[in-house]
Image (tube, rainbow, N blue to C red; front, side, top):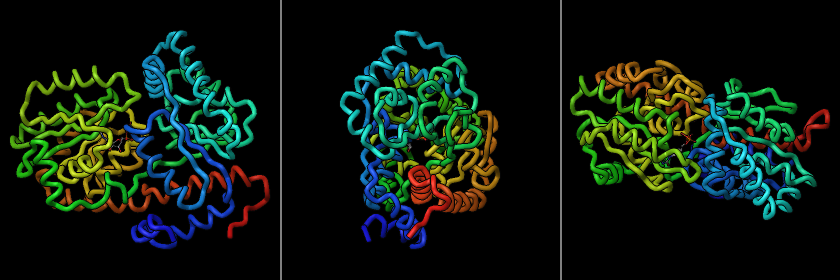
Length: 413
Ligand code: UDP
């Protein structure tokens, strides 16, 4: 048995691993490729960095390719992202032409590999038009949408749907996000890796040295949001919730930890707004951590008393899962993937406004026993539903069904 699988077995039980081995048997020899647009920063890279090695360890011939693009390409795809999440975004024809041209250029390097693969997973809109440049593909192509596409801005979705319609299947994180498409659609929620640097247990001394090294006082209560500086993550709303809570708990500190995902050109302007809203408050710590500062994020999440994820739209929200796994009830925006993680009043609180978030934060800070009880429920909920092993099981099931689904039944070993 491989080493990582042994360790997962300790956390999830041997039956879970046996089931993965059974599912992978019909996929022996299959060539699988995942494609996205960044190796670091954001939830998709976070998931692929863990999912791909585990598939490999199970014996799948899997690789992870990253497409490259210039600033205009990412400006365009950020527009897609915002439009899928409901914003009215008019994308100029010149940017769309550059988008298609960028995919065509990337296909020059990737084409033979992609056409030869048995299964290709294309993540999000950035590489979606690659399919058009691989006319001799032999395998099944799956479009994996990580975004809350429940109410997309129609003209942009119409444009993207032209590319996506050619796929054999698509995956959405939640039923509410699925859009009518002329192929089979799967629902698979994302997951976290309990063995990653981001999520492993840390020694209290390490937590202390990381967090105090960042200038935060561990003796005083800490409220945190870990997120890219993105308008949909509502960091300014978080500052407002912090200020309202601080009226009652004057020692409160706020950490806003974010990095700059390489495919997010709007981060700097959001960061400006955040700095203006923070107004030099010495108890607000705005941290621009490198994309691979996983242990520091881990330490920050563990040191926090209150974790917020005040998103206005959220595809899933791995930061929610990460905090819950660390025994923190999360106060989250009542939207998208946060709704399937935060069971209101059980594993955290859902709230639509800074005022609501502040009310819940105050309540939890004044009721520490309840905070702990909800935190334990949150951790168990993640163990049952949002660990990598469950995610992998669903991906394997999907691959088996796509490759062998024509028979009356599929025999596993
Ligand atoms: N993250 C990080 N450093 C940061 C900000 C975020 O490592 O400064 C990680 C975070 O821990 C999580 C992922 O990036 O694993 C963000 O995923 P999520 O689904 O919450 O949001 P997305 O960025 O994909 O919208």
